Amino acid sequence: MTAAQESELLAQVPDLLFIGGDWVDSTSGRAIEVHDPSTGLVIKTIADASVADGARAVDAAVAAQDGWASTAPRVRGEILRGAFDLLQKRADEFAMLMTLEMGKPLAEARGEVAYGGEFLRWFSEEAVRIGGHYGVNPEGTGRMIVTHLPVGPSFLITPWNFPLAMATRKIAPAIAAGCTAIVKPAELTPLTTLYFAKLLEESGLPKGVLNVVTTSTSGEVSAPIIADPRLRKLSFTGSTPVGVRLLKQAADNVLRTSMELGGNAPFLVFEDADLEKAVDGAMLAKFRNVGQACTAANRFIVHESIAEDFAARVTARVTQFTIGRGTEEGVGIGPLINEDAVSKADTLVRDAVARGARVLTGGSAVEGIGTFYEPTVITEVQAGSDILREEIFGPVLSIVTFTDEADAVAKANDTEYGLVSYVFTRDLARGQRLVESLQTGMMGLNVGVVSNAAAPFGGVKQSGLGREGGAEGIGEYLETKYVLTPDPFV
Ligand code: NAD
Image: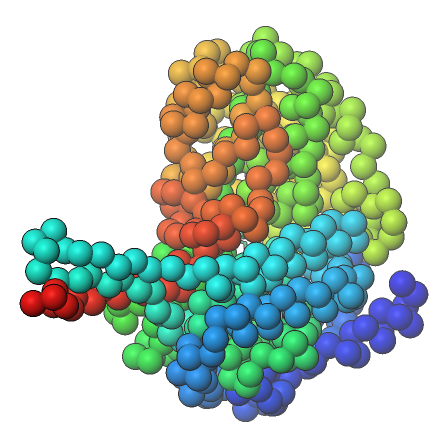
């Protein structure tokens, strides 16, 4: 895409709030400047919602709720399927938009369009499979009916790292289930959600079913929405500290909640692993999205007998990466989202090195324009290093060793997080043992990426509550209703 085409694309993205089916200006008098992290330049200025705008969005979602809940599931599904089809036609535009506002390499942005789109297709199919059951009660005196109804107006808060997929993973099941929604995208990457709302509008989504509020004052605007007694559900993806705060707010209103929070994924390589496959998996699990994924492998826990070989092999691959603006073909490492992210990765590496780790490649921020950090491998990371406890969220591969399976499991579970784990072994029985002993909601057994719209994504411990995707995903937006009727024969 040329610079002129980039500007043309950005001009098509709405710069207003989407409330009740209308594109409206905010009442705050402020604006949000969206930056390209690879240049630092402002690429678009959009509306910055006020508390009053948030309240308007709730009004719109509440007004549309009954009509949407009584819309035939097939119709709801067809709208999602139409959106899926339209997204395929606009795949290049959405990919470019994400690369511009978030920085990820274009090839990865295309991958996210494919992944994010699958939630539309999957939930278009799930919309017509919302089941229930009917049966005789044990006493034989009545008939028990169990049905599933939409939870009601839902508030969806998304992060910046997967601007499309994190939105579709919430919006699609909400729409499929018959819930209306207010979406609040991250202020760093709001453009993809705005453009996606426009796509849903074109796909025939009725007014008010989806509302978008973009704001730079997330806490201030969100708190009254969460406290509104008409709201029934909060679904959040983001960091654990913010998730904890929102759970406390949601408790006051006894909201249904889904929380997709932070991770600290262990990546275990056993002595019997196919080492080349483990290296392939490591590259994906670590460097996808420039390391800015909740599922990113954060701690490589490698058997002591192969750690040196593994480290040498990953280092050989890492040194081949091209760093640059994500819009350029062949770039594998784009910028991090902002200066804070660069300084966090750098601080973690410096702490590890000060405690005895060795840098095999990288280890510094890239000087010049944009917020780039070198793809890095560090080894001999010592217990107690911050990098083993905190989410790196950057392109830093950090290696520790283990002696036996019990040691590997103890090290892997030594974290308050529990989103995903990766295991490379050729021993089937060991793989099966680890399915049960690793405290994570998901596991990649000899693979480096697990995400799939058809699978239940989510974590245990402080990585969250609930699941997105799969058969479970729509259940997060459904309430169970039980009805008893008398025995019709007496
Ligand atoms: P963040 O918690 O800073 O922000 C997430 C969202 O919450 C943004 O939209 C932000 O504007 C909003 N927010 C922040 N403070 C708020 C408040 N007080 N009230 C209401 N909303 C508020 O996280 P981030 O930096 O955008 O994303 C990175 C984090 O997200 C990482 O921890 C990552 O692991 C996690 N994440 C988790 C998953 C998952 O599925 N488990 C997926 C992607 C990202």
